Length: 498
Image (cartoon, helix red, strand yellow):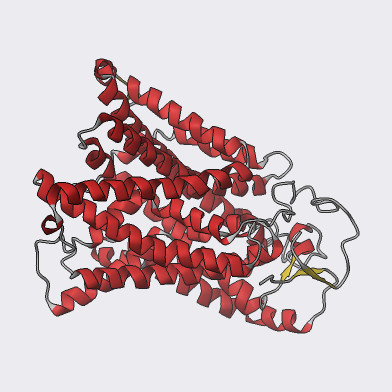
């Protein structure tokens, strides 16, 4: 169990014993197994970075018309902001040993925490289906390359997806469910392998590209346009913001993983290697590959699946594509499966376990028919922008509450107390101040998303949401800070382990 400075010892034994069944089950209770080292956290971020989405994002920054040193500077500044925010959001969950949905009870109340939990769960819900569909497409390429006689199965469709597409989607769906079903220990082992495996393929692919084109065929500036000094400055600021926005989803629920960290020292070390170092190296390797495709194939290819499929050796193609599929499974599990598992479980702990919560998202992803969503850029744009408008304010409120209002303390037992005596009961289990801070902050984000003239400002919606959410909540809850600072509570207080 996490270290505690005890005002009064817990009078019960066992995981979650004595806690309200309306708020606790074995998955949500403070974990007894804080055994993740810095390498496990490092692997977590590798799984987030080493994906098809991460590949395209990294490559796109080099097409902005900036010099390579300017792009690398943007990537470094952006990813360092992510690292700082990851350290901030990790601390309360690591101290208490509880997931994101439970730590949200501090700010929103023991029942009000369902609001941020469901919002994050729905975001993961949509992305889970889309990532599974992308992985299924990669699997289809492998199958058609080795068994071209199956091509007729791609010519008929049901609900917008070909019969072979359904087979591939079902296969990827089952593979992910199998990993997830074995719990966090299996997920830990999987991501420890998935992230490094992608590096092996990426470095091999980069080596093959350089061998084919020579170093003269590699350029670190992929753009064909030139920008003025003012335009360059704006593009650099925008690129920095986009890096943070790209990681904002897994960043919000990073507590789902930091709860297992041995100490904050281990987590900070994992974040340092997994974010600045890892992301910059991945970006450089990505640019070598993308730039080489321009020289080798006559056009720039930003889809890693297509690039791998053009390698002459069939075995190399199969290994490369299967590794990319593994990477997609990795990011899907850590970013879009674990989160809704805890989030939906938080809504009804006795009826929805960690496994059940994850399977709700998995089944829902089929009903969502993500291939239809993905094939409509406008629909997916508005769907994810609406959900994304909530991420910044939720992060801002969570961080402001822990550091500015609660002064870095977590009253662990009160997180599972559904009586008016509980510290996080507020008003019938809801904190009106947190909700009041969330609503206008989200409204601003939605306005930015739906007004075309504010399109460029939308790139900074996460930052705007964080500042509005944190600032509004800090002002509304200013009196609560005085109460926490002066009052004594007869409960267990989590203490940080360095």
